[in-house]
Length: 268
Image (cartoon, rainbow, N blue to C red):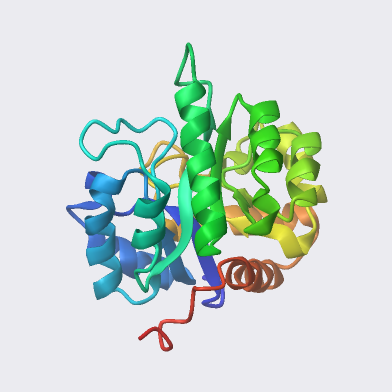
């Protein structure tokens, strides 16, 4: 049985080519599974126009603007603060990013990645929009840069969180939210599940990161926003809450964090 329509997939990439053949079906299945809103997250400025086109047609889909820490910037060039701030004035944009550090896929001298991260945080502070943070194998540097750049002034979310409670606490102390993807449902994610039990309910978000990381029982399939229901239901059971309450809470949290997001009936 589907949840009451109150879930938000707080991080997906349905502008990717993976969805080009059945995008309408993807959006319909999300609604059928109680997913009322989606945040389509930018990974490169050169692709922002396709996200913009998507949000103009579907008023319940919001967007961010930014360049992923692993993205190649040959076409668009390195993002500048002004580029991000100007782009953030689009009516559907509610966040800066995704940004952050990824020491798993990128090797060697990564000062360029740190600089890119700092630019996004500065843009978030200027635009007064939260930042969406990707962090992989870069726990200490991620927190250090967030502190150094005063990211608590704009806030944000640690997306697809997979780290330990120490990092979660450091992010929470900066006013950040913690978002869990389908990874938390994996059988071998016991440590992460322990973290998920402890995150304060008012700082919790759920996401798919579609088309990646399908939750149990959809592993092996292309992920899509409808599947966030499985992650939400798993988290609810893990935390000893009702699925309906967790859906309501994470939706409240989404609109509290992403203050520029409004219900589809209110967007003008």
